[in-house]
Length: 85
Image 1 (cartoon, rainbow, N blue to C red):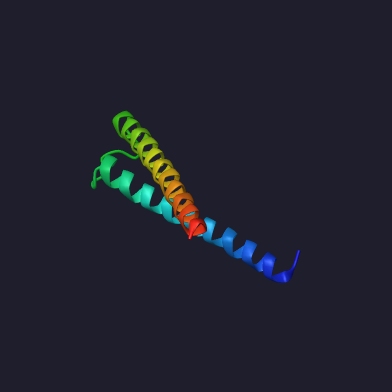
Image 2 (cartoon, rainbow, N blue to C red):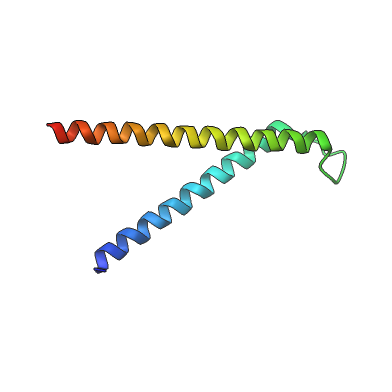
């Protein structure tokens, strides 16, 4: 593999890691804010908090997947339009 191809692949991999880290940080902040009270009354996560976190994470990941699929579809449509020109 040529050096430039390796560099491109490495850049893509680094961007993917950065995007996943950003998504994880946003998910963590969003679900923590929604499900965990600002004043901790117990050292352990309560059952209601755990259920809220489970649902929040599931919804966040579901929406992330849906948006990714939609963006992929839009990107493919754009490519097809450019090929027709």
